[in-house]
Length: 278
Image 1 (tube, rainbow, N blue to C red):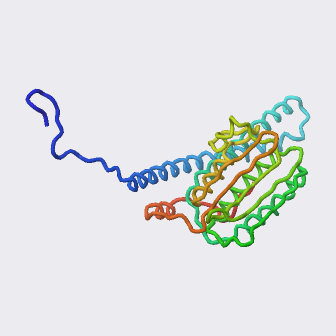
Image 2: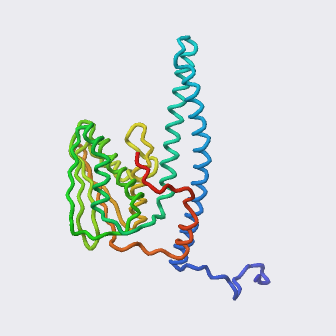
Image 3: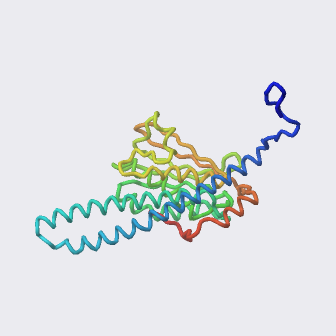
């Protein structure tokens, strides 16, 4: 209402803003889901023409590959350069899509040691080629825990790939499971170059990378997957000596609201049924 002096005052029917923490969290979740859906749709729209471009560039490259004409040779080199950049962009889009999809896992009871063992078998040839020895130390008494195995393998692969990249001259990679304060714990330790102290707080930030050509999405994806499982991940690192990523996971699945369940069931169109490990 307005007084005779023209000054506005509050009426008796002033709307009270809802500051209930649960309601705020649900609104934030819904907004995040909408943003993720839009981002995922945009990434899909970018990926499709990129794939078409790469296919056509490959066809043109095949046609020019055997030509010794200097002009065509120069054209071929330009086409190969564009093809490499297209591949880099397509890889970036794929990594971004994984990041978008990672926030809603579909967990089922799984043996953590078996999941790690399967991935170690997959990674051992690459590790051996780099003169890296992978050691595992498993706590056999850890019960089955709720995991989206495909998502979790992708997250763990990113940590292993990060460790291998940090040991170009060889070294050791130690992967250990254990119980810790009523939770399952997983450590990934390397003897690589380590992370400078002033950069350690940035490693989980999207698009931050110290590796040339890196997308900067591998470690953010790992963190997002772990946190979506109700867990936590942190880094301990000493330059020149190596790094350790420490993960904890609950024995029980994280609670999920009705809104989150509906959101999960309506998104992730076209999500693969197997781990897309690269």
